[in-house]
Length: 112
Image 1 (tube, rainbow, N blue to C red):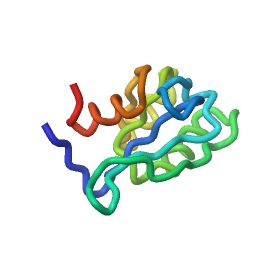
Image 2: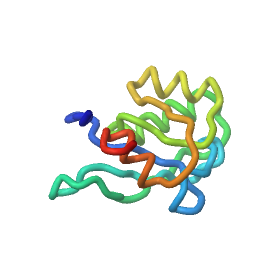
Image 3: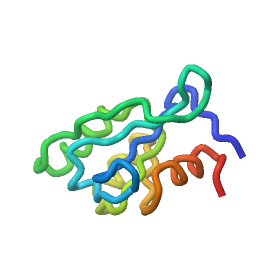
């Protein structure tokens, strides 16, 4: 099933290695952004810095502002507060590990 998100076409990924979803959202200094390119093929579009650690709920609200064009966040771990704040801003949080390409393909409906 193909997922179509016109207002929020992208997915954010927390990754230390750049190859795997292998980073807890609380430890991420940046997030990789994946989405459809000009040719419609999903690929990495770039990276975005996350708000500085600390600040509690305000940090997660600021992160939601950084991800206004993302419909999902893939991370290896997240606490209940960031999950709730992000999901309240229509950003689904998926706790997963493994290859980024495979995980992104699944979220966009093209994987197994």
